[in-house]
Length: 148
Image 1: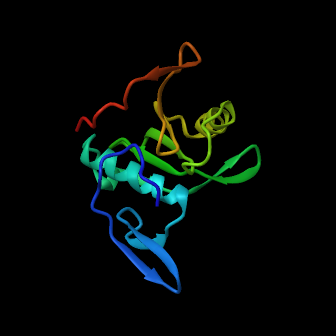
Image 2 (image 1 turned 90 degrees about the horizontal axis):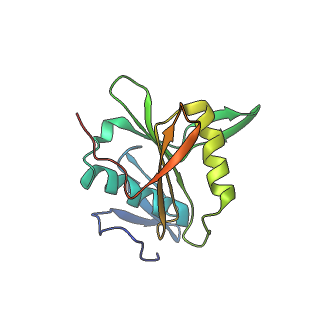
């Protein structure tokens, strides 16, 4: 897999039937290693090891209904009270982060109401904070660290 703009992490891999799988510490199972999954797994480890978010507050690939259609978010981080703190959208490294990527994440966030957004293809990372009263997003240099 392509090197990403993240630190190195202790991933576990296995091969089966000529396919490579990576162990997902959130789902506690090996999942098919596709380019988007490679980015998601890096983001999980980044949040845990560099931003100190507990694994127990991270959730991946769950369904939500957007304008009557079933969609799937890539990753969310919950607050201890169950509210969503961070919504992350992961793209394959070959996918350019575009306005369409931001629009997709904003549509999901109308339902999920996360305070922070991450949009990444593993090479570029965009961090935003939703300013609800002003009805806009503010771009940040980084996502805040976890505060217990």
